[in-house]
Image 1 (cartoon, rainbow, N blue to C red):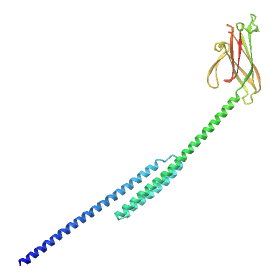
Image 2 (image 1 turned 180 degrees about the vertical axis):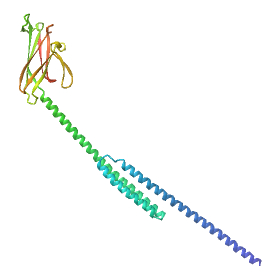
Image 3 (image 1 turned 90 degrees about the horizontal axis):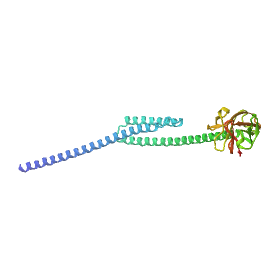
Image 4 (image 1 turned 45 degrees about the vertical axis):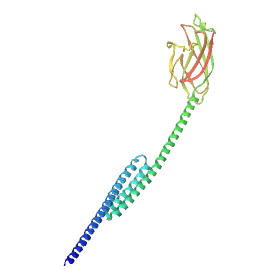
Amino acid sequence: MENQSKGNNRIWIVLFAASALFNVYQWRNHTSTTEVFEVTKDSLITARVDVEKELGATIEELNKYKGINDNLDSLLTEANHKIDEQKERIQKLIRSEGNSAALNKKLMAELESLKKLRDEYLDKIDTLMVENQKLKDDNAQLSGTVETLSKNLETTVNTASVLKSEYFKVSTFKKKGNGKFVSTALSKRTNKMDVCFSVLENKIAKAGEKNVYLRIIEPGGKVMGNRSAGSASFKMASGEELMCTVVSSLRYENATVDNCLSYEENDRIFTPGTYLIEVYIDGNLSGASSYVLR
């Protein structure tokens, strides 16, 4: 009986040990399964978040190029349509796929596809932007060339239409007591200077009344003139304002015409030296000469 009781105890010990080992195995197996489930669950959440973030970032990145030109807008409309299609496909996938591991794998594939789509359209946008900039540069260069040609043509025409004066003849006179003038070559006897010249033929110039300005510049560099005797200032074509000795007008009909202008000093005589004679017509220098008084 004692031996039988010891045998029974051994059996119970073995069974208890086996039960304990089985419980430990089940606990470990359950823990491992739980850990796998948690990892799968975490991976799935990460994949969904990454896909959603990529969708939003792609839409934002592409649409910031909207409004630059019609070709880009058309391309972006196409891109947004494809993104909407992929977004709908992803949502359908999330609703229909029951296997977490399979869903996670498919979401990762959709993420890569979305990135590829984004890069593809960024390349197309880049190409269009480069072409658009080149077109702008070409247009700017063409506009600049046309503008330069127009300015050069305008300058050429304006220069060609300037009336030229040549064949200057300067005469000096002394005023006698009876009011008559007699020729003189001496500065200390000179009261009056006559300047005659020919305005040359110019078929390009506009015919009509022309303003003629005579500048007599004495040896010291001062422009001779008396406002009470008709002297005044005038503006050159460049905008610079100059003092002139005599102002007159001339009827020009595109043919050579002779003209004479006179300046008289009643209160003083001319000084000796070289006098510079300049003639301006409508604000442009028409001709120049010099004259020496002894």
